[in-house]
Amino acid sequence: MAQDIGEQLILAEWLFVETVDDLRRRSTNPETRTRYELLGIAPLLRKLLTDGKALLNTIKTTRPEVPIEFHIRSWNEIEDKLAAAGLPRHFGNGGERIIGDPGGPAVGLEQFLKTDIGVAEGNDLSVKSVIRYYAHVEGGVHFGKPAEPGESTLNGMAPLLLGHSTGQIQILGSLGQIAVDAMEPLRQSILSEPTIHGLWHRKDDHGRFMNHWTTEYLQALRD
Image 1 (cartoon, one colour):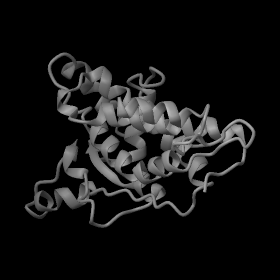
Image 2 (tube, helix red, strand yellow):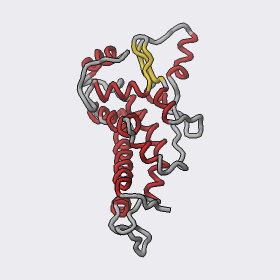
Image 3 (tube, one colour):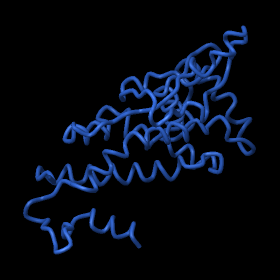
C-alpha cells in the first residue's frame, strides 16, 4: 500500500529514483564514458551511500521489508593467485572484476563500504575511501589536496593518465553498477507504491495517481 506520511518523503523518493537512474546511465559500459562522466559517479555514490544522512538510509527507513544486497568481490579475493605466487601488487584496483555474481554472496551497506577493492603503495583502498578520493580530491564534489592514505599515489597518476586513459577511474563505473543492482528493488518498490499526499493524489481510472511525479515518470518510460 502507498504510504501517506508526508510531502518531504515524496521529494526524497523522487530524488532517489532520479539519482539511481543517473548513476545507471553513467555506470553502464564505463569503458566508453569520458573521464568527466565517470567522475560524476562519485557525488552520486556519496549522496546515496556515504553522506551523514545518506539518501538510501532515508528511504530504507520507511521500506524495511525491501532487501538491499551488494554483490561485490574484494581485492584480496581477486588477487589471491598473485599473492600465492609471491607477487604482491603495490598499486591497482579490481576494476570490473569486483562485480559479484547476482546469485552469489551479498553484503549490506556497511560491509560494502568497508570492502577493499584496491591498493596504493601498500595502503588498502576501501569502497568508501575510493568514493571519498574522487569526490573530494579529483573534484567530483570539491577539488582538493590528497590527505588520506593512498590518495597521493592516486593523485600523482591522474594527470599522467588525463587525455589518454580512463582505466584507473573506471572503478567508479563498477561500483556504480553494484550499487544500482543493490538499490533496484527499492526503486521498483517506490514506483509501484509511492508515498502520496492523501489530499493531493487520487487514483484515476487507470490506477495512476493524479498530479503525482510517478505518473509523468512512468509515462516518459513508455514513450
